[in-house]
Image (cartoon, rainbow, N blue to C red; front, side, top):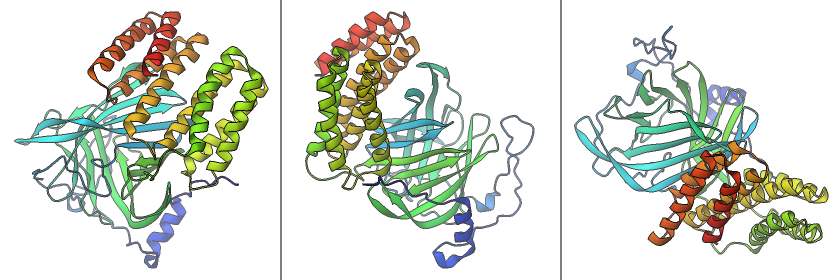
Length: 444
């Protein structure tokens, strides 16, 4: 079977054609008058080409009677428990996990105390943690969703190198509208409005689009253009039931791969996905033991299971990556490459659990991902990759924030994470591997 690919949502040319020919269902793009306000660029050597106040829909005083009930279909953060995006940035594979955390935060702004939902954003570039953010959202009584700030950190080699872009409503500036209740072509709103810290102005370019989602067409999507503080722009697509659906700019692409419960499926985990997950776990140990005869038989069973599963309705972005990684895994086993086989076993298992997210609670999948990052420590420790181990421990700590376990288990996990952090910070890879093994045993 030929693997399905994600259909491009709109090229620039196509967007121009759609705007030019309203019979395709789009209103013409609004052309606001010249702006009167000067918002300085991040370098301070000029003004951004912002829209005039007459085009903005966020110059209102929102009321928040029930702020944590977020029902806006184009930004349904209150219903989305787990979102996965797969793309490429700077020519490297990019992965984003967005998770709704169980707690809330009360933020005081403009004389109001507003309870906000907390969303955890974790981005991985080429398999290493790149950016982490805690975002705070609330819905106003008119159905618009407001952004109350973010606690953001950029990482290199598992260590924080910058917190630039962190802001909080009431402390650094005003809360910002991140999605109107009923977006229309020409609407302008600022999703971040703290010039000098964080600034983004959005213009709605098209509405009522149909886009290709993980399981078929999705109606009612919109396209916006986002102006950044450095003067650059990027296009984003938002779709009902998903929120942010696709981001593209400067050759980078971040499309949505899967979201639950929007893409949740009925029934238990298909047997083929179980075969892939258990097979990947077995290969991790078989490669270390160099039992290549059993490894070859195992990967053959996994490949057969995948061929059967992918003949059905599979989210195309995950399908493409899984097919590639399985082919690489077969090659690594044929070449008797133990280290490469172990790494690819982790990669395949991760994609398998991504697909299982359609059938299992996100909390269970996060526990499985937690185990995989502990396994990744063993791979990186064996390769004497100090920076890799440090990054792995950071990833574990972030997933720990999403785990729901009893008090006894939590205490043991936290103790082992403390041991891992001490070992990683001290460059003691042997101790890190030992702690990772004990952590896997505990989870198992």
